[in-house]
Image (tube, rainbow, N blue to C red; front, side):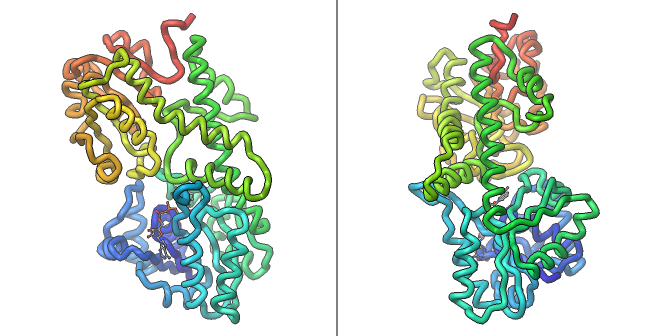
Amino acid sequence: MRIAMIGTGYVGLVSGACFADFGHQVTCVDKDAVKIAALCRGEIPIFEPGLDALVATNVKASRLDFTTDLTGPVAEADAVFIAVGTPSRRGDGHADLSYVYAAAREIAAAIRGFTVVITKSTVPVGTGDEVERLIFEANPSADAVVASNPEFLREGAAIRDFKFPDRIVIGTSDERGRKVLGDIYRPLSLNQAPLMFTVRRTAELIKYAANAFLATKITFINEIADLSEKVGADIQEVARGIGLDNRIGTKFLHAGPGYGGSCFPKDTRALVKIAEDHDAQLRVVESVVAVNDNRKRAMARKVAHALGDNLRNKTIAVLGLAFKPDTDDMREAPSIPLITGLCDMGAKVRAFDPASMKEARRELPDIDYCDDAYSCADGADALVIVTEWVQFRALDLPRLKRIMKQPIVVDLRNIYRAEDMQDLGFVYESIGRNKSKNV
Ligand SMILES: NC(=O)c1ccc[n+]([C@@H]2O[C@H](COP(=O)([O-])OP(=O)(O)OC[C@H]3O[C@@H](n4cnc5c(N)ncnc54)[C@H](O)[C@@H]3O)[C@@H](O)[C@H]2O)c1
C-alpha cells in the first residue's frame, strides 16, 4: 500500500513509521519546513522511546520519506491519513478543525485515482461528513472515500501501542474503503489485534467516549483521594481494593495532580461542546472537566500548606515538568498551573525534567532550570515531585536531606512510602494518604 500521512506530529510520525515498518510505502508530509528538514537530516523532533531507531531503519529501507509538499505523495497514494492537530479553539473549547479542513482541501486537489482519505486526528462527530463535502466540492470528479480511524496510542509508549493495539476502529460503510484499511492493518492481525468496522460517526464518537471515560476514572480516584486524606484512609489501597474487581480494573486509578497532556483536557472539553450542539447534556463529563481544572491549581495550595502557608521568598524545587514520564510534551501539563500558582504566592521555583526542559522554557520562562535532581534540590525549602520519571523513583534520599534547606517533600505521584520518608526525617506529603489519621 502507498500511504500519505498529512501531519507529522506525535501521531503522524509514529503512525507513518509503524506503517512503513509493516512494509507499506509511506510519505510523511508536514507544513512545518523546519520539522521536515530535521527529519530529512535524521533528527527526530520529539522525544518518544524507540522512535529514532524505527524511523532510521525504515528510511534506510526506502519505505519512509518526508516532504512539505503533499501533491506527489497524495497523487500516488492508496490511502491518505489526516493526522493534523485539533487543539481547543481559543475562547470556547470546541475542537479547532481549521487544520483538518485545510488539509482536506489540499488533498482534494491532489487526488488521482481511487483514494481513501482517513481522519486519524481526533475530530467531533460529523467531521467526516464535512471532509467528504469539502473534497467533492473542490474536486467533483474525485474517486474518493472518507473514513474515520481514530488513534489510541499513548505518548511514551506510542510504538508499542501502535503495534499491539487493544483494537483498531475503522469507520466507513464503503466496501472499497474497508478493503484498503483492512489491507493496511492486516500485519496487525498477527498480533491478534481486533479490527472493528463500524460507521463513520460511531468511530468518531468512540474516540471521544474512550478519552472521556479514562479522564473520568482519573478524576474519580482523585476525588476519592481527597476524601481518603480527610478520613484517614490510604488511597493506594482503596484503588487496589476497587481495581481488583474486574468490572472496574486497576488501570487509570492512580491519584495525582490531575490529568493533562495533549488529549484528555481538549477532548473532554470538545465532547461537552459536541453534546451541547446536539442538545444533549453530559453532566458527568462537565463535572470531570471542572474538577480537574480546579485540581491543578489546588496543588500549589497543597505545597504552600506543607510550608506553613507562606511561600514568600521560599525556594521550591520541582522534579518533572512533562505531563507524564517518557515524553517531552508539555501541553496542558499539571506542572504549569502548579508552578504559576507557586510563583503567584511569592515562591522562587527551580525545576528539572529529563526531557521536557526545552519545551518548558517556552511555557515557563521565568523559573530556573537545573541539570539534575540534586542541583535542583540543593538549598531548597521543599521538593515537589510532579512527574513520576523512573529516575525520580530511586533518589538518594539521605543525600537529598543533607542538601535541602528544609527536608520537606511533596510527592504528587505517591512514589515513596510515607513510613520510609518519615523514618529518614522528612516532612512528607502525598496524595490521599494521611498517616496521622491511619488507624
Ligand atoms: N498526541 C497523542 O498522544 C495523540 C493520541 C491520539 C490521538 N491524537 C490526535 O491526533 C491528532 C494529532 O495530534 P498530535 O499530537 O500528533 O499533533 P501535533 O501538533 O504533534 O502534530 C500535528 C502536525 O500537523 C501539522 N500540520 C497542520 N496542518 C497541516 C497541513 N495542512 N498539512 C501538513 N501538516 C500540517 C503541524 O505542523 C504539526 O506538525 C490530534 O487530533 C490529536 O487529538 C493525539
